[in-house]
Image (cartoon, rainbow, N blue to C red; front, top):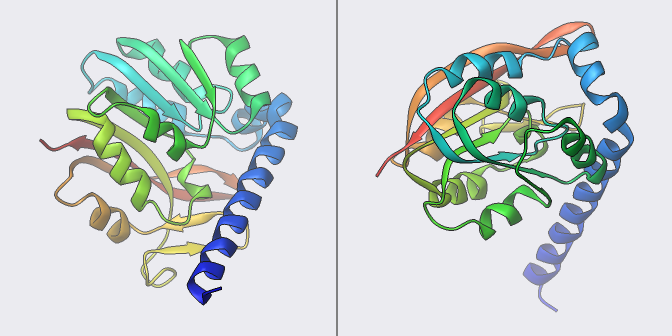
Length: 224
C-alpha cells in the first residue's frame, strides 16, 4: 500500500470527521441560533447583505450555501427580486428552522461542494456563502465550482474571517477556535481571471470573546 494512498485515505477520514462534528454542533445550536447571533454576538452579515442587494438585478435562481436557519436568505429576499431561493446546509435541525421561518423554495441537507457539483453549468444567478468559509481550509474547489455554476455576469457574495499576511503567510490559517481565516491576497489569487471583485469590505462580523471579530465581505461578478 503506497504512502500517497494512505495519506489520501487519512485526509478523507479527517474531512468526514470534520463534517460530522460541524453537523452535530449546529444541530445542537439550532434552537437558539438566531437569537444568540443577533442579540449576543451582534451578527452583521444580514445587514451588510441588505445593503449589497440594492446593487443587484433580478435573480431568477439563488443558492444559499450553509444557509443555517435562513437569516441571510430571508434578508436577501426582502430586498431583492429573487425567483427561486435554494438553501443548503449540513444540519437537519437548521434546515427545519429555515423551513419553519419560510422564504426558501428548496432546501437540501448536503455538503456545499457536493451540492454545487449537482447544479448545472450557468444555472445560478447568485451564490451566497455567509459565515461559511470559516469552516473550510481551502476555498479553491468551491470557487472553481462556483464559477462553473454561475451564469456569465452572475454574482458571488461571501465572507471570510480576515487574516493578515503576518498571521497567514500562505494565505490561510486555522485559529484556536478551530475555524479558518483567509487573507485578501489568497482570495484575490483564487478569483483572478475568473471573477471581477465589485466590492471588498472589512467589517466586524460578530462579537467573539467580548471583542469585535473582523472579516472581509466580497461581492464578485463572474467574468465571461
